Image (cartoon, rainbow, N blue to C red; front, side, top):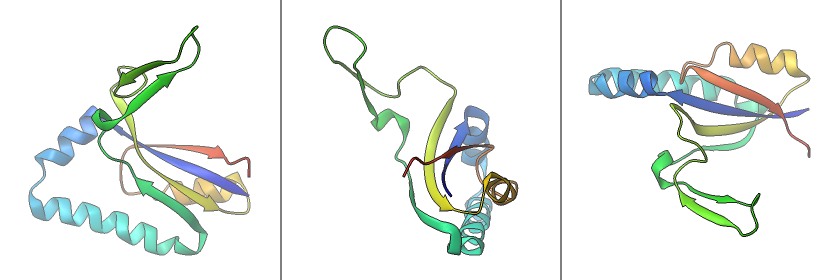
Length: 113
């Protein structure tokens, strides 16, 4: 079954990461790379997203489409990346995510196709 993991950063996570030394940042990114390598056989695609201030949102719930800059809501949490995985079931996805060494929140959602 396919799931999409959405990696969600918080303001505190971003501040903590920014305060790290270059070596600490490299070590942190190394743990993420190791996790991706460890689970490579189940990864089907994904990407880190650019900063939320590069987002454009189109609202289609009014009489006319309404385009705004930035994420859809003012938020202190933003989706920073995603990864499609193919695993047996939600339990296997949960086992994978429990060892994720990056941002503090991961949303797991089944993919339709």
